Image (cartoon, rainbow, N blue to C red; front, side):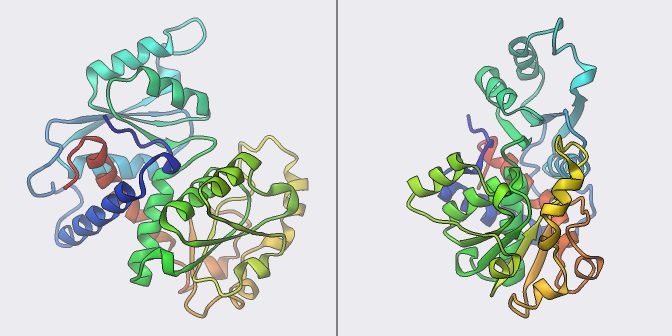
Length: 309
């Protein structure tokens, strides 16, 4: 049984196999309507149970379409609709029920501990749709988008991240190790990646480059990534954090130090970290990036169900 929880735990050859399959599947869907099923319906009769503890738009829609296009179906749950929790049903019992009714489980959660506990008790494959430390489905899809646009392996490109050190960056760092690409990180000193993440990179004989100057981080970049710096759920002084990131705005001046054909990607929703003229520029490929979630997640599902060609 294969889970898809963190990029760091998945062999590089398996991640590449997922990307190769996603490329083929996207090409074959060029003339199909949204809900037309892929040839041979590889997941016919299968059901994916999705549970959301955090708000979701792209993850919810993309997994719904992914399983449907593969011939299966989905049930979407919210944790506050279940018995799970204090005074209710145990997580262990919930996991056993999910394993009885479903063929796969996708969890979007505010607890890394919950990811590990569900993994411990589930008898079906599990996918991490987002957790505090990791967003693996987003970043693997982003690698797909980069290679699709640039028409070359990501290992031959300079990748830059400008912004907060969050779950998306953690997964991007893992991807830089798995796919061997140069990763520059531009962030204020107080917001650099956590030590255990950097230690893991070093343990794998790799390196990421951290700059406290956004222009130095973006110099000669082929791709600039970002994410929302101030989120609704931030348990910090938001005004103070905004001041810390004042010199890390993604604007035309920043793009000017990158390569002329530099691509801007953002996992959305956007905030004040990116200027509108960049977000809506020809350099921005955020809508292509968002749609590609469907294609890559189809191949992730097939990987978890041992159906990957």
